[in-house]
Image (tube, rainbow, N blue to C red):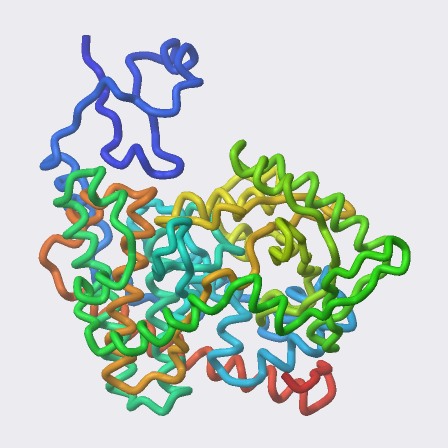
Length: 485
């Protein structure tokens, strides 16, 4: 009997399943994978290579401005809907700080620009906001310090090209802000693409288990040819090792006596507007949310969290794109003097969702958590989701073994190496959901893509500077209110 071959990239997020008949499709609908059909690696590579005929590398040099792009100020005002009104001026103040800061708060605007750009049709689980500052260091459960994508607010299945173009454009903007020469900025963007391609090629040749289990630790610097970053990585790793719940408690809490129970426990110290206490009703709602959150954890970790008790809750402003959303930190007490600080951050619909053919998720927090678990080599063991007052949230450890390398503070050779590192990390992240062999087949040995996306990155950085200037002018004219960042 003829049997249609399963698509080579069936392990993509929305990969097809192929069966003998429509009846068999219905019969086997519950099956998540097809373990009966073996596909030769050469066939997978060939499928990717065939895409070059319809989407050559040169096609990726699309216009910076998409046909469906909204007016810049209309976009900014629309993105503020649903946020806490008193914090919107602070968000605007952070966005006008620099073109790169504007870029960080405008993932949806770039998605509108990319919506009509040529793509191969190969789908990966996207970061959705893969700019250069969204790669950071964090600790694994066994104490290793790794570097990976660390923000998944916009994660969705989509074209791999979108993440790569956003990374490249961000490197140009970060370099310009840091005073790197224009040629240096372009080189960083091009080398990020080159590193992405080469990492895809390398992963395509590895045994599946080896490529899947590879940790993006310090050794990734050597593989990405980013040796100039060794000192930066070591400094960031040392700082990350000091970033613990105990340090947060020492800096942001004080021992106070609970007048109701007579027990002395730690409480957060107000530091307005960044850190402020919430009222009793909100604290109770957050605690209820944490109790619901436990169900989103794996069973063994539910037992772990059940041993803690919430001691205090505060509101904390975070980030640029997240300013104005509800964000809390909760202080929990464990064994004797042990403390644990958890962050609860409101989850909004992905800024990419309006431009991608995806189903509306049942819970935006669950979408973010599932995306992170799929993409990261190791995720926070306490990462989960919950609902508070009818709104979706994600929950994670706050600053636990976390660090970063600021791309705007890097010299030219370091920025170039940072681009290589980020490109390699993005490639590894994408291959958790997209078979690297089909993408390696598409890339073949062609280096044209590096320069094509490099030129796009410069063009988009120029457009972002113009968009930033438009917002600055609106603030100066009084149309949009802003507070100093």
